[in-house]
Length: 305
Image: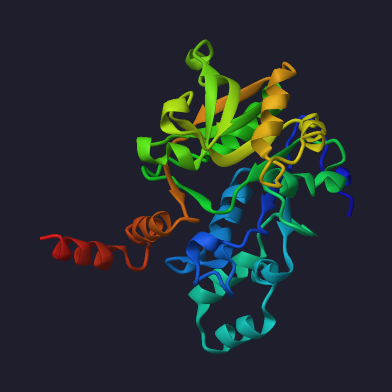
């Protein structure tokens, strides 16, 4: 089905692009044969948590920008007849319900192969033929957001709702520590719109040195772009590292007087593409897991005495 048939009206953002073609080198050797997106947070793959966030935000379609080694990601969301029959026979109804929920997400999934990995910008550009001049979101699958205070907040939904009202593109931001600033894309902004609940972004610097950083606010891997943005990405040149950078397209977009809002994250962010971030994510999710939280917290208290 052509996505254009299910993506009206144009002021609604219904499709999310998820780049999953990366090799996950920061988590080797675990990612040698297993996609990093399929690594578990307690007992749930990272990509499933991401997909649940996307479904809860109201999106209808997901485009995986993928690689031949990543088939297990799509397979995870398929119906598993043999497994379901086995669980039914063994009267494992709780597990059966959980397994069925994975394949019953109210999100259509399609995949596009990225022939060669030429950077994040190139991965997003691969989605252009499917988007047909429609607004879209980008979600990076190694950045997990947890509603740590159980407020029921979905940052991505808030961004989507804002776009439906204003038509403005936006990025979700968080504060980086001094030691982490050189790991992320750092934004420049005006203070003038802060009282309205967002920052007016004026530029972005990819992985700057601390003394060159325009702020301590970085992109958390949640973006919403209007239909014009893909044209800027298409015109973005390959950089000295042989990649098409999303950051460069964002700067061209801003320089052409397009509005780009920055919203501040509510909740906890975990960079699961990093060993430490992945370990911390498992710890934090285990502390609130319905099956093991009490025993796990008791164990932690015992170890920290």
